[in-house]
Image (cartoon, protein in one colour):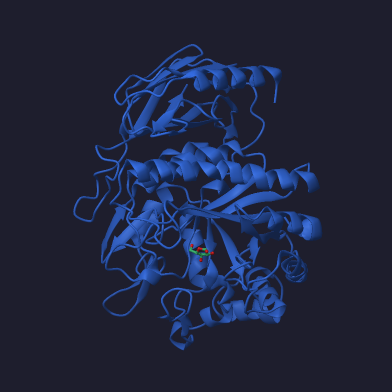
Length: 519
Ligand code: AHR
């Protein structure tokens, strides 16, 4: 941190500590932010905008892979087209907990001959394995996304995982590569992102970190580089309040790890009664956004541990599962984790994505849970209908940050104050980047559902003459899209920003998310 940055932060902290609790409707004092446009150092990896798709409920079946009246399986073109618009960079698959139950050979070869299994993690439904390796790889090709496969450690073997790796990647003649050819695919797919198990501290085998670190090394040893394909080996990480897991992995296996897959879910009440996705008041709005903001603390904590073993930041921290987890929609299968998605969820997304952007130095991949019909989804389907959720729209608005240079911001941590009762959280979440064409992109959210905010942003080291933008907001905190009314929450043009030289002024309405482009 520079002295200039420190001084700005201290001034901002002093100003916010002195601020009295405002009353509802009272104008908020302007929030001052500085974008250090001359200090861009890290790229915001597009892989931070990754998705997660598990064999769970209708995440795959009837989500993106469905059967027509004649019994023929096919991809849903409407869903694929919508996903292409948010430029999905990678999709984590086949789980989740399912990954440690999945035997890949069940999912290759003629579909009619594939065995069925019981999906014991998610509702004990019969899984017919009609969506397997070739179908997943075809989906990746249709989306233009990179595969991120999680291998089975919990109930699998080293041999099984290494055979899957060879099946996908070996270019020459070998038993596995020949089987791939027999099943219709000549060229290797060159898969590089590879997870060695999922949540081994829980559904993945209930292991101790010391034990898993050894197991990890065994499995990872048999993922061989082939030609242009070098494995990017991802160790299953812990969760926010388990720093010891990260510590032991880095200490005992760090030299063989390329990424650590940490999980962080936002829970409003508790794991038993999480709360309704749509029936909530301001207390639950506030709590959700406060908990979402804690992802920053978690990433800082785990990054700091990694810094001790890896000061050059070779090993990526990956937020491999994140999002808000509500109670399932009434009347739906509790094992299917199907939940609605409101404006509040859009804020969980914007706050988290801003945090991920700010951690670009160490966090180089993340996967929201989950892409379709499960937890904080982009898309919900029912029969032939489909709707885009408020979270989808945030992903679409944040596309320009993908692979852009992070422009560090002063004042972003703790900007403005949103008070509720005796508690307060920052009112403004924001991040900024510069794309390859030199345009600056700023995303900003006003978390306060009652008060507008004025943001005065200094572009230090840059000037702009035009600003254009879009806004995502709605009348109610729980506004959401339904199959009958799919466009209640969607982006609209935004006219509340002015730029003059290096000063940008933005008038943010209550509970609004904006994405701005400066030229
Ligand atoms: O995303 C749902 C589940 O949450 C995943 O299967 C598991 O990894 C996590 O606990």
